[in-house]
Image 1 (spheres, rainbow, N blue to C red):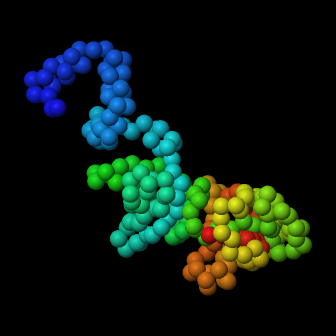
Image 2 (image 1 turned 30 degrees about the horizontal axis):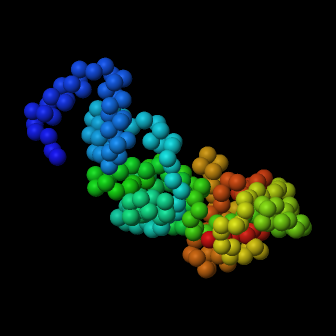
Image 3 (image 1 turned 120 degrees about the vertical axis):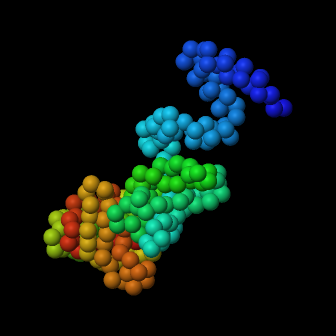
Length: 236
């Protein structure tokens, strides 16, 4: 039952008269009991009364993959099963947050905020980290003499790279949760950004099938360098 204006004012006056710790305790208790009110409270306080804390970007992060992006309109969407179950829609991606080298299907890790419509919007987008259906690779090494490793255990074998690369070992994780396309693709490392931790492999066969280069995560780079010829497994 709604309280009358005088009753609400009396409640406000009582709260204002408390010390800071007590006020925070009361507000925290109310938000825990009525979590549906939290977005409105935060929207009122940020950014007019305060700034969002660092935790908003470093905690409660999510994984997903770039589902669609329209360069002309400057926006797209990230698919994230976890957030879809909560909010019922994909995560909005604005051009101002688009990472360098974005491709549809790229796995990403990101923080979220709620826009003025109460819908999720991605911020501080980092490549990798997701379990999306983006096309990626796990390298066995460059062209050369291959050892046979147990891929299901993350043992990718060692080989000699051809071109500008050095003998190296690709590092990887289990393939239990991904769909492999094949394990004998050959290509050249086209680019790699050490700061951002990802790059791309030029593979004519896969480009003919999917229309773009193969996404390469830092964990798979090993000791290879841009220009190295590599043989790799690709997965969706």
